[in-house]
Every structure is written in structure tokens, then in C-alpha cells.
Picture (cartoon, rainbow over the protein chains, first blue to last red):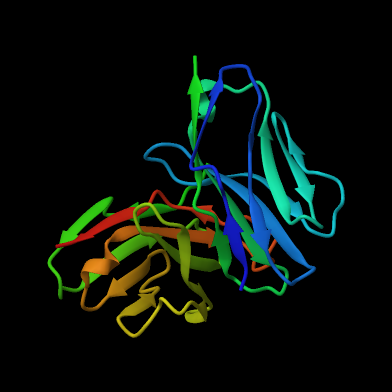
Length: 115
Length: 115
């Protein structure tokens, strides 16, 4: 079974600085998709960024980028120029490419942004 | 921007009682999901639903759970006889298409407390 591990329950970053959130996963599949979701306090989860496993190029969305290391099964999220609005829970998620509807989540990392 | 909505935001019930959690997915979406998150634990997949039937369910989704799309807009999760361990946040999600790359849009969640 696929598992997703986020080893950092909490992280803190100074406004305008860069922070990296870690995520590792375990799978025997070669075709899958990885996601980072953000959950602000009392708000719903929203998709931040996604990566197809067959793509070697790391996904980037504005200030958000990933470091996808397929061999190491690592999928970290880098937030550049951190803003106060980035404060949230961040969930890493895995989804099989077999059209399995199941999305597997990590336990989450709570990011605090200090002004 | 269209959003997934969930009601109620917080539900308190006595053990053994039935509860119905309601979700209104985004209007043109065809695939619907329920997840739950026990406090301090991972977000876990419960069930997916398409074309008025369950397409996938996890081992958590046992006989006490059922889902229904009673009309064209609502998607409900019923827990027949609640147990203390059912206390959790329940998230509804919807997506436009089945493809695993497609984003799932999440609702804000319903916090269920079973006393």
C-alpha cells in the first residue's frame, strides 16, 4: 500500500524568506501523481501544485516549486518569498495512475510565517 | 469562483445516533468523494461516487456508512449508528473528471463530535 510521510509537523519561516517542506512516499508503482494541498485556518484545502511522476522537470507555480526525486521517492515543496498568507497546514498527497480514485495524504505540516 | 460547500460545519451527536453530513459539490463536477481526518491524524479516503453509485471505497467505509446523491445537487454521507471513534473532520470533494491528474476540490469540512 502506498504511504505518504511528512516528517515535519511544524515549520516556521520569516516573511520574505524561503522554506522547504518535506514529503516522502512509498510505492511500487511507476505511474502516479503527487500533489501539495494548502489548508488555511478554518478554510478548505486548495491545490498548490502537482507533479506527474513521468515528468522529470520539477513543477513550478509562481513562488511554489517542488523538488521531485523519483528514485528517492521524495517530493518537497519550496515556498520562496514567504508571505503571511502562506501560513497554513500543508498536505502532501499521492494518487495512483491506475485511475484509482483513492488519494493518500500525509499527516500535514503546519507552516507559521513570522512578520 | 465555484466552491464545494458542506453543512453543518459542526455536528454533535450521541453515540448510537444516525447523522447525515451534507455536501454540495461544484455544479458541473461528476465525481464525488468523502474523506475524514481524525484529530492529529492523516486525511483518509472513505469513498468515491460516480453515476449514482460507489466507484471505490476504503476499508474504513463499512456497513455503517452510506452515500447518496438524493437530488441533482446534494451529496450526503450517512453514518447509521455513530461510535466514539467516528469523531473526526469529514471532507467532501468533487472533481470534473476521473483522470488522476485532475484536481479534487475540497469543501471546508464538517467536524463531527460523538459523545
